[in-house]
Image 1: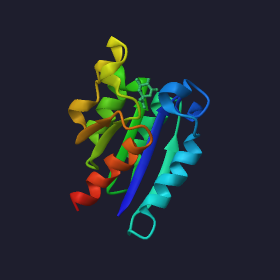
Image 2 (image 1 turned 90 degrees about the vertical axis):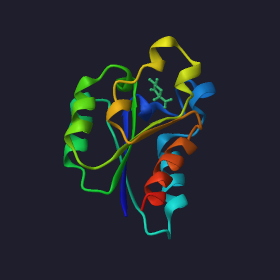
Image 3 (image 1 turned 180 degrees about the vertical axis):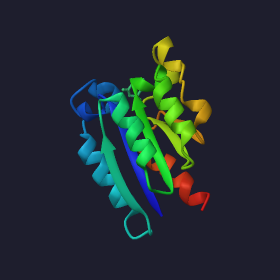
Length: 140
Ligand code: DQA
């Protein structure tokens, strides 16, 4: 099984920005831990990050994998382009947030992508990515 982890805007700043919310580990550290978690389990993990909305759409369109784990960052709350890109591909996408977006500012409670995603995981820090990815293994 091949899984693609896509991180959107500002996620490259993980480990530096708002450490109380997103932790002290870098995205590279977290990606390494995810790859380690799935090592020897027949799962190939690929990682992609971009701050550019259109590039996220292109990554979704071009994905050749069994499942996508997407933390779109703030794009989650307003990007109809990413929503439409998710809706246009047949690969299932699970939405991820490290923080509990429902316990933060009002604008974070609204996701324009949830409706076209297979499911959503939020609030478990870096483990949100692993929990989302595990759903693909459980579903075969
Ligand atoms: C986030 C939550 C978003 O509201 C925020 O804009 C992010 C990160 C998370 O992982 O908790 O950039 O997606």
